[in-house]
Image (tube, rainbow, N blue to C red; front, side, top):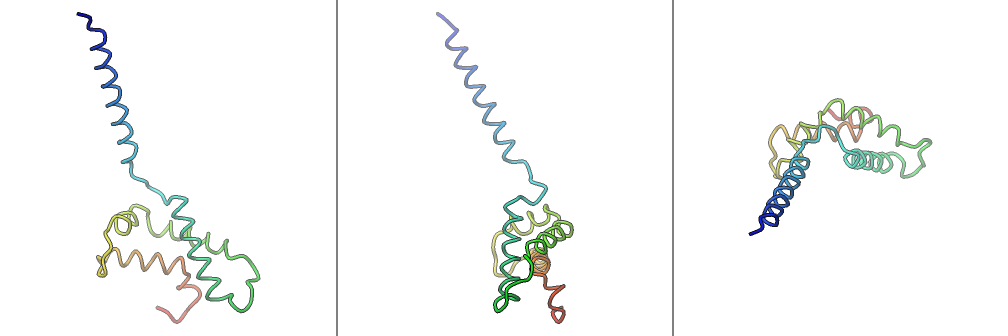
Length: 123
């Protein structure tokens, strides 16, 4: 009886299992920084709010992209991504979110919408 085909099947099966486990390990790595998609979403929200609030009647004199990029930098400095990921992305939606989730979302919106800098009467 020839054992070569049997050993070849075992080798290929082992190789397939090793490859699939390596792929799973790579997928389960935790992302430690905001992705480009996160940045783009935040900047689009920021620019939309700026143009709707302040430039409906008269066009903006300068592009607000730079302002929104600065706000995103401030956001990434003040809210670490692992906190955002844990308390916002991985927390299921609830009409009554946990306190930590609500405070991070409020801080996120205050920074990206410029509520602290442009509307002084809101606390």
